[in-house]
Image: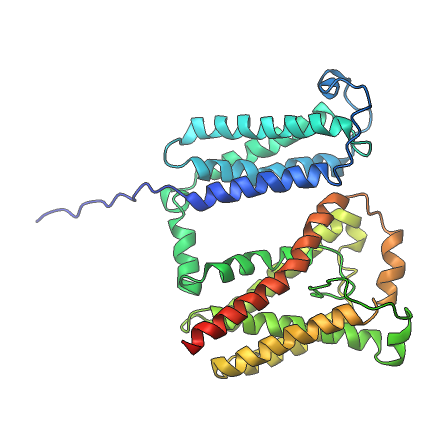
Length: 358
């Protein structure tokens, strides 16, 4: 009898990892240099941050943020190099690449009045990249080539990669502080109305419940159209909601302190998620055309509620009192994501309807 031959996994490059690494690098540069108010008249040596003394006070938050921020960069750098460079050389490249990016950012911060570059930040960034690279190296070829992840998303979505991108970005679109939970799509369209006019129209708890419920109901129907028929949709969508809640709580605690980690989880948000999930469970069995109409209508109603009704008064009063210095520039970046997610989803729906007609 012939012994079965051991199959060797094909060593495939991962272009998506290279693109993610480049995009994440640009996000780091944007987050660290925003708002780009450079003052070149400081008269400082660009490398003064390296030759200067270590800072007297190093807060755990700053150290943790600098380490965590570069872990994904080191992780994706190893993926991006595969299979040409592996193991030791991939780690070395990840360290050199991340170190150069961090050094360039620290040098540019010399001319930013609101930033204080230090070699401690650089060391923390390199440490984060090193941790990320070490996490990536032990993974097998099926992960490093992108095959395992891609097979999973192919099983869920097929070739609809824009919907895959929106699926991955949805939890992160909720990081930016919102007046109502899941209240995406704020486009500054609100007319100049009295700040308390909405109290005569709708209770703020009911308003928040409607925003949360409509948003989650619409998002669930959106992904039900994008997912393949055999996928257990409701279980996958509820997992997405739980991941979104975890990421929101984590970043809220990092931004404003652990005592505010769940301050966004109000009664309106809870009831909105409950009724949104129940409505979603009922409607998942309907035809695609009905789900499309309900999804599109939910998104339009969400935009109207978010933009033409006043903010929750508790949110408007409390937000200025919280410590917003933490990740304040990161918030600017997440604000763009919160703005853009819903319009991009609407564009996808329009294209979906065109394809359905054909």
